[in-house]
Amino acid sequence: MKRSAAAAGALAAMMATTPSLADDAPGLAFRGTATAPGSDRIIYHEFHEVSGACTNGWWQPDEQQVRYVRPNNDKAFATKALTYPNSPQTPDVDFRQPSFGERLVISRKGDTVAIDWSIEGEEGGTWTLSPDPDLVVDAGFDHFIRDHWGPLTAGEPVSFRFLAPTRGKAYDFVAEPSPEAIEGADHTFRIRPEGLIMRMAVAPIRLGYGDDGLLTHYQGLGNIRRNQDENYRVSIRYQATARPGCALLPRS
Image (cartoon, rainbow, N blue to C red):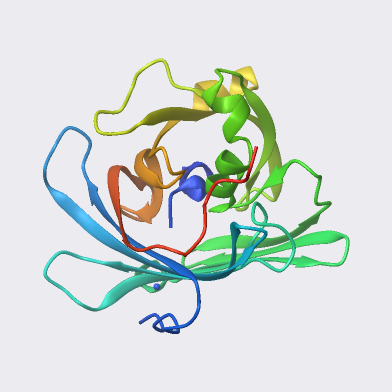
């Protein structure tokens, strides 16, 4: 189903040409190469630029721009803009995939999270819901992992509510150490639904991290469409091209 694929793919690690980070501003830049699982065939590249600030020795994001590019092509076929006005784990999102006539906008408005989704050939929808303290939105999963680095690296699971934006609902998920390590990652975690029905419908996503807290691997269903009915299942390898002048991980 289109809606199920889009909902599961909302985790996906992360469009238009992005502005360059200011020379005097601490920032993070990284690129990802998405391949088909078990294959070296490149599906697309991701280019991320994140501006932010060092607060008490800990880097906090402000704005993030992402562009998705096919191999041997400089033109973005999809874009994402994120801002972090409230919490790193609940960014505002503007995702566009023009070839499918798709746009997804998620924004925090007072005491509600507003969702507006449209796609060519389907009804789409508009929803609002309350922002629970443990709510995670889109790329906010990356910051959620770092915020709970201590428990996760100690082997403890951490529960949260993950937003499935094309359903207008948040579901119970858990982040935990993965029983299968990702080669090349210092730490391997997985994100999976807690409910039985969702576990049957949505496969876990595996995440690789470096000791510094930088995302290095993403394995699972992504947010880029393979066709009108399904998203790509991808293996993404990330590499930093610029780092902020302070730690990504909070002080313990």
